[in-house]
Image 1 (cartoon, rainbow, N blue to C red):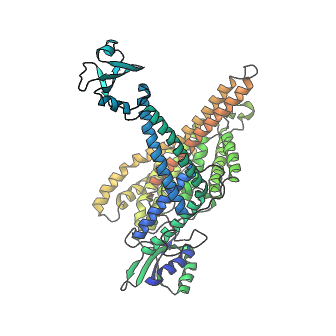
Image 2 (cartoon, helix red, strand yellow):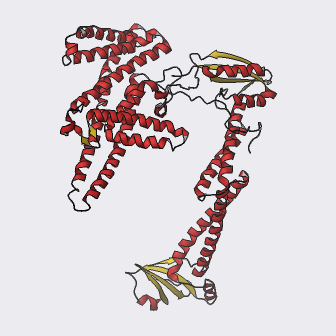
Image 3 (cartoon, rainbow, N blue to C red):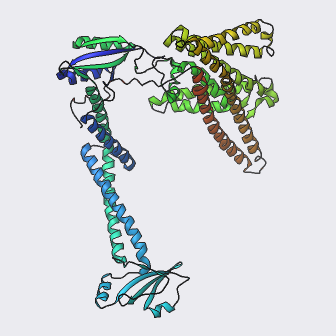
Amino acid sequence: MVIPMKKYTILVYHQELDGFLDALRKEGVVHIEAAGGQPESSALEELHRELSRSEKALAQLKHLAPKGSGDQDGDPEEILTTLEKGQAARDRILAEMGTLKKEIEQLEPWGDFDPESFTRLEEQGIICRFFTAAARHFTEEWLTQYSMAAVAHAGKIVYLVSFGAPGEEMDLPVEELSPPMASLKQRLRREEECRKELEEAEAVLTDVASRGVTPLEQRIEQLQELLIFEKARVSGTLTVADRLVVLEGWVPTTKTAPLDAFLLESGAVFMVRDAEEGDDPPVTVKNGFFSRLFEPIAKLFSLPDYHELDLTSAFAPFFALFFGLCLGDAGYGVVIFLMTFVARFKLKKELKPLMTLAMVLAVCTIVVGMATGTVFGVWLSTVPAWKDKVLIQDTGVIFYLSLGIGVVQILFGMLIQAANRYRSHGFLASLSPIGWFLMVASLVTIMLKGSIPFLANSPAGEIAGITIWVGIGLIMFFNDVKANIFVRLGKGVWELYNITGFFGDVLSYVRLFALGISSAILGLVVNNIASNFQTIPVVGPLIFVLVLIIGHTGNLLLSGLGSFVHPMRLTFVEFYNNAGFEGGGRKYTPFAQKRKNNVPTGTMCP
């Protein structure tokens, strides 16, 4: 259920704004709206930069922090500065080491030498030149013809050095290289120095990481508080010679009483009104215990628009049933239930509802598995002692059950769409989806009349023959209550063509049958493969157990994923489409204090 909102307009004297906002933040119920869209200020930009800088640094510190770090304390700014300098030094050293590595690889074939000797030879009129040549082209004659020496052979390349007069030409298939500027010994020495410098830089980073995580987390919390406060401060509109600030915000009707008391006590001037058509209030929902478990699934798609119904409670029972049908193995359901039951006592508080949801889905899986007689890939309908106790022995029943559930959910969605339109646009706007409901329900009744004795012996068929035309009439004349009669008739003809979409939506529910059968068959295959190892002497039973564990674990993971994804697809596509769900609601985010200690007003950053 979407909680109704009240819009508050509050007048505050500009010199009292910071103090008022500090007190308002402690109430923690007003979703402040920025005048003219997203608020901007130089202070906000600076806070965003500092927050981004701190969050990036925190991620790096967590990666660098050694396990079992001791007490963490220190000045956040000093930690940031040390981290940034240490990373800059490390990056510079690593870049230099990369260059050195390439130079050493190039120098190694030439051996160690003194580059200054080239200068002394040049002064004597002797030029030293460096070449490489393909080994297949090289001949020993080159060495005497051009005063050349073969320094090294590396694979298919020969490294050559020549000593001759300046400007001497060589008619050889060689590639001349630039003379090395440093010796191999010098580069190896510098590489060793870089390794020591890198160790020192790494030690600095490890030290700052061991003491800096907690201070940076505290800094980020404070920056977030300051950011929220600054956004609220610049969200108001100055009026009356820039002396009064107009603040606007939304408050759920369930939280207006304490806010009214606070505003009256503070002496603030304020006005309150209900949300009107054209407004875009933020959205917060309230559901019962069972439906609340499915809210994380609903939020994966979108929050509902403020002016439409929240469908969480409408799809929750269907989703649980769909999961059970897709997985469909009582043994797997027991495993999921036990695992999530234990995990619920070990995980953080915010994750416990997800474990409870998994337990509910596991119970549905157990129920469906017992009804169909499937336990860890064993089909109880094939076991003589259990055959008569299995409720559903024919897989064809599951096929038709899947289609039937699809029809029910789609028709339910049409009624929800009618209620949504009635709620938002009035009675006449709801007649078109009611027409769709009557037409589709009548069509299904006529199709089933011959196969269901109850329908065959009742006047349902004759009634359906009448209501189908009533439904068509409502679609033709009330598809767009704002258009003239001729436009409505044209749109009505086009809408009736969409009856093909209904059959496509119903066929989508066959996946419930297909996934359930595939899960059962895979489990059966695992059992058959494992049984083949039982005849092996000594190690046979061990291999049998291992194959069962590994095979059923893989099947559970694969089938469990499909059992979650496909019901979600049926919910977000088939059901939401027929319910006319649009979504796009903005999350209700109250201006509230999250830290225990107040953040000083007017403070830019810690």
